[in-house]
Length: 158
Image (cartoon, rainbow, N blue to C red):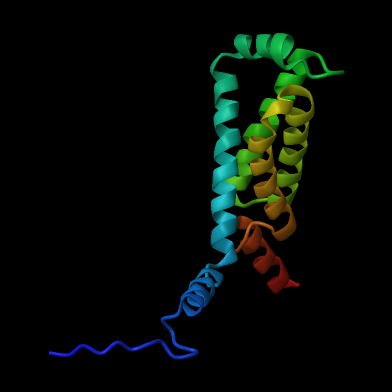
């Protein structure tokens, strides 16, 4: 019984480089809209949960804004109201994919305030949120969105 060993030929599909290239080609087939949808859901979920925790106990939220967050210029009550409204509205609009770029911009502003004035040491987490929001600002909501549906309806009627 003899066994033969075959060496991969140049250009063979079983070389590490060829396998890597096939993996890259497969990854490049992932629709951008899927990435946009996942980004919208992920970052929307973060801000939805944050708003829900603020609303669960408004007196504690006000106390946090007075004692821990200490956003400059604004009174705690106004800062808490603006932050919660931005989180709620932004999250809902991201989930729907409606006014996505405007929502992403508003939430980026909120992330900037959090980073600069509230939790500057949490830059890694804030950078993650900002990255998803920048993707949505730059590329929009994708085809699985009300933005896309509205664009198709309005461009069809014009």
